[in-house]
Length: 229
Image (tube, rainbow, N blue to C red; front, side):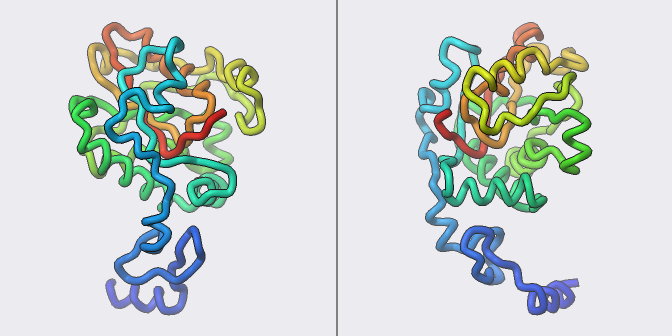
């Protein structure tokens, strides 16, 4: 099998998803140069980081952490787009594993019971072929050992994409569209809600409001990127 993979790598060499250069054997998704230049958020020890401040006065989240800064034209936007719109799922697992490695070192994430991906509507899921948040969640689970449960929270109404909407339009677009199939598993538990990018926080807020219908649930949030909406 290894010989076959080596042969394929000669015929179809893997390339860095940022700069396009061929990857060395020990490199994955991005070359070492691009990896070291990824715009990390540096929010590690800051519980009141800018992404957390988005939700102040809106929903009482325990923790909010984003691994990278997502800005127009930067490498994180490039990677997220290759994942969501070109189907490079390995990028999603890469992001999840990077996030998982980081939150493993944060005591405030130690008692997580479940990882809950932000759900897609079945129509969107069928069209895209996968839920990007669920793939990120499984990447996180690889490093944390926490169970991913995609059957607790669901999207009951189809909504149009949030891209290019104003802050108010984003909030209006997702208001009351999420619900719980069952809340027994998460009653009194600490759950981790996972999304790809936090902009205005409207989607996370709508998910959290649905989760908070459960007694004594605590909700933390992790996302790949943060950008100011």
